[in-house]
Amino acid sequence: MSERNLDFDKIIDRKGTKCLKYDFAVERGLPKDVLPLWVADMDFRISSYIEDALKQQAGHAIYGYTEVDDAYFEAVQGWMKKHFDWDVTRKQFYKTPGVVFAIANAIRAFTKEGDAVLIQQPVYYPFSEVIRDNDRVLVSSDLRYDGEGHYTMDFEDLECKIREYHVKLFLLCNPHNPVGRAWSREELLTLGEICKKHGVIVFSDEIHADFVWNGQHQVFVKTAPEFEEFTITATAPSKTFNIAGLQVSNIFIQNEMLGQKFRKAYNASGYSQLNAAGIVAAEAAYRYGEEWYQAMRKYVRANIDFMQDYVKRELPGIRMIEPEGTYLVWLDCRELGYTDQELNRRIIYDGRLWLDQGNIFGKTGEGFQRVNAACPRVILEEALGRLKRVLIQV
Image 1 (tube, rainbow, N blue to C red):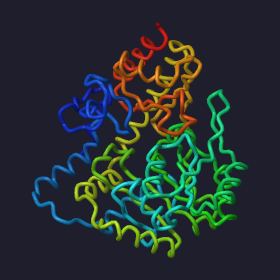
Image 2 (cartoon, helix red, strand yellow):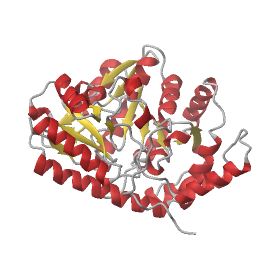
Image 3 (cartoon, rainbow, N blue to C red):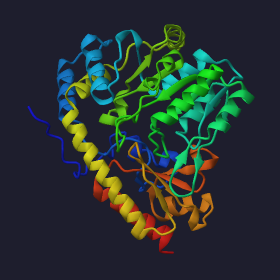
Image 4 (cartoon, rainbow, N blue to C red):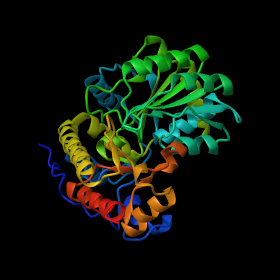
């Protein structure tokens, strides 16, 4: 058997499938006919191996409580070893229906109401939501932007914020969404030493680890042996294999005491077994999805290169921050001189284009837009053409 679903130029009609991306614009206050390149799922058919595994499960026609077994873990373990040279063990392994769910559990496990949780804005906006919704204090050590397309951590500010607010938990986005940084080993070492010094637990969201474009993703907990004592690492097949709707994530915690606290918070949530289809899909993805994954990566990388060239040639006044990781592209539109309100109005109502507005990632995201490049080239080209028409040709 060979992989069948390798035509990434093929347009798949997702409308009428209860698709968040295509079917819920009106419910979210947008025009019905907007072209969506916002939420981080792909417009590609999944690996045929995953498709076949799900068909086989459907044919069985019983969908009772389902649990992960040794075969599932071995598939996950093999992927981590092959792609990141990371040895994970069953004892360290915890399963959750999603990374944000795991973050919420970590917040409840390792902090109490009124405690400070640290993030680095602009960052994936559910980080902020889940902190506030759990009645914790959101503290941001904002990333530094040089104005030329590069972001760095402000270590001096980060350590100052940890001391000032008595931070107990830090949410690391690695690779970073939306700015696209794939943090270097040196950066992660510096960060880890600061957190170790001040007794800060690190939740490292590494859901985009399979999308580092140059070199290998740096697993935070691997950068120094002592980091195992205060790190929770979150991974998932959802972004890599386009199965986010099947709700399965894999969490690794080496410190037994942290693991016990996390497990207690998890149990208190009332959740137990994962989605039955998610377990089947994830195992098939990690065991048989390599060919599809590599072909998809090549296609998405070419999309990013195409977008970089298009922005330089056709969109003066917009700077594209070329991603080192993720398939999400961060556009700096501030030189155009529009207010956030006007920028968003032109894109949504004049261009009929649904992107992620930069301000939802934090105040430092104002004047930016996030674009999902994991779609057929013709869709990406159409979206960029609409940006040109409503932002440049005015």
